[in-house]
Length: 462
Ligand SMILES: Nc1ncnc2c1ncn2[C@@H]1O[C@H](COP(=O)(O)OP(=O)(O)O)[C@@H](O)[C@H]1O
Ligand SMILES: [Mg+2]
Image (cartoon, rainbow, N blue to C red; front, side):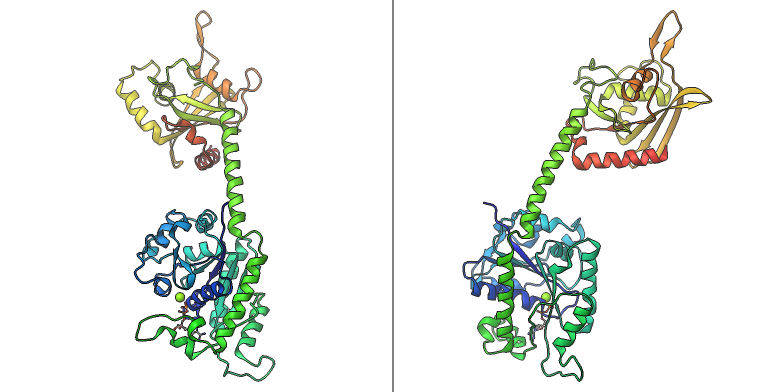
């Protein structure tokens, strides 16, 4: 059975608000409260606090968080560490991955497929970079520690991000952190945490019930002769923070247990249905294809003709199919360069055109010029800049009444854009290069979307 993590991200654009302390200690507390619950943690920051805290002496870590982002299944990267917490080792390569990560749902997809069970905690860098955004969107719960007004002001960016993406704000929760109990105010908000909470609620931000006090004991846990970072659970007994963490982790556990379907599971079913949808649309596109090259009616033997290396589609979707390389190149050459007579296969003009035509997109459109039927033939670069346009008269037959042959262009257009006999639809044909080894790949979702964008661009230019 596939396993999915319940994902908690600790995030704030401010440094020093207690994110890493919260992430690491929450993991330890959760594990202490629920021994059988798998708890995993990793960091998207480029320090190694997590490794320092959780790695076991002599353990040789293999794989790290950069590998997860590059596609290694998450469950294969989780190392069982101290206090029974699983961790994915940190990596300095994240600096590079920040530059190359495209899209903000990459992590959501990877976690949906990760096979990591239980609760997964993500510590982040104090910036809303692309990796942080990925963590936010993959989360069931985001905890934002705030310690003062500036850090509270800063939360707005995370809330705005969620609003802009149409995501539910209720997954975002604020927790007052590093609260100094000695500070008291006159008036309705008597202390630091009540003031922060009131400002947060006033801005429409949800607050977690508890808060975390500032404690010199906790602050000292990462400064000792052994160079270790000690957990609050084991080394700060008797402090307020000790019981505040206990309360917080119980709240989180309840939320976890109340969540029947974590986002990773929902996202996975969405991915599956999306895959199914893509497969169905691909099959639908395939079923519309004309079987043969309509320029030669399938008479050209595929191997010597260079195979199907062009795809055509009518701008109104009324016809589509593949064209043999030689048929299509010869045909286009005739109309673009007036090469009327049939060229030999090794004719330099034909060879050159065959080579460069795969860097071009073509459009063919029936039109009228002073009441005369004409055909426009356009050539564009692959990114849609027009490089050529030719206009030719369009007649059904060539030759004279004694010896006449059906005009190739006319036949091609009536086959693809023909409506009633002698009439064409108000549309054009786009001819796009395809991979002769695997022509059908042009019908794959992403490629086809690009083709349709080119089609729209060309329609606009025409
Ligand atoms: N409850 C607390 N009381 C006192 N100091 C704390 C507390 N929580 C964290 N700290 C200290 O505050 C500093 C910043 O915490 P850290 O967790 O690294 O924040 P961030 O990850 O947001 O930069 C650290 O020195 C940490 O030891
Ligand atoms: Mg940190």
